[in-house]
Amino acid sequence: MRREAVSTSNAPAAVGPYSQAMIAEGKLLFLSGQIPLTPAGDMVTGAPGTQARQCLTNLKAVLESQGLTMDHIVKTTILLTSMEAFAEVNQVYAEFFTGAPPARATFAVSGLPRGADVEIEAVAVF
Image 1: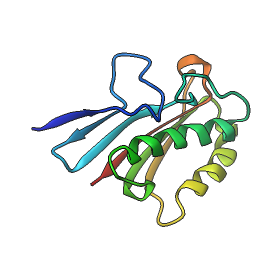
Image 2: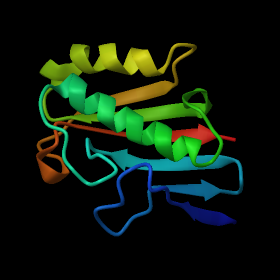
Image 3: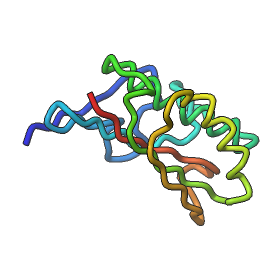
Image 4: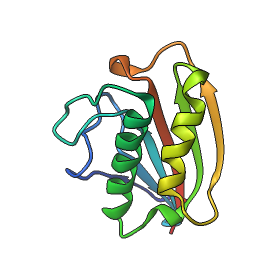
C-alpha cells in the first residue's frame, strides 16, 4: 500500500506525532483533526462557531495544498466539548459545504487539545 504524508505551511503544524494528512493509494486523503489554531500556531478562542470556522479553514488549506477543494470531502467527524454548540457549528459548517454535504458524525467529548471546544477531521477523495 502506498502512503504519503502531506504538510503545508498554510495550516498549523501538527502539535504531536502525526501528519496534517495522509494520502492512501493515491485515491484517499485522510485529514487529521484540526483544532482552531492559525497557521502561526495561535489559538483562536471565542464562540464555537468562530473556532469551527478556523478548523474548516485549516482543512481547506490542507486540501488546497493537494489541488483539492471542500467538494472532495466525503466524510467528516466533528468533536465538540458541548453539544450546546451543535447548532452554531452547523451554521458555520454549512458555509463551507454549499453543495451536497459529506457524510458526518458529531460527538461530544470531555476535552480537546489546547483547551479547544471544536475539532474537525475529514476524508477526501481525489
